[in-house]
Image (cartoon, rainbow, N blue to C red; front, side, top):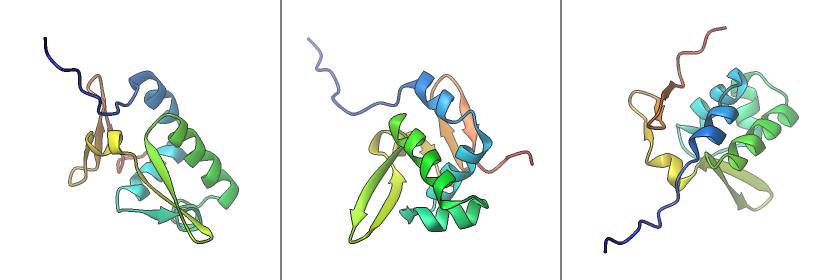
Length: 107
């Protein structure tokens, strides 16, 4: 009998729902560079801190990002499950059923 992998996985439907908004795609694109705090994400994406925080909450609920507390700041990074699906060089997230180009957003 083969062992089942216990590695966390990203739910494709939840990920697609989370990535349906262009602002959340921009947030994901910023997180590809490494751990970053919400105010830096907001500034880079042209959003308020509240809206960036809301986008990060939705992405975290979908299993795409993880939050880490460092002193008074919260740093956001790709989740372990999402990390395995990302090609940083191409800036793509491949869910298996579809792939998202995180750097090719239409304004």
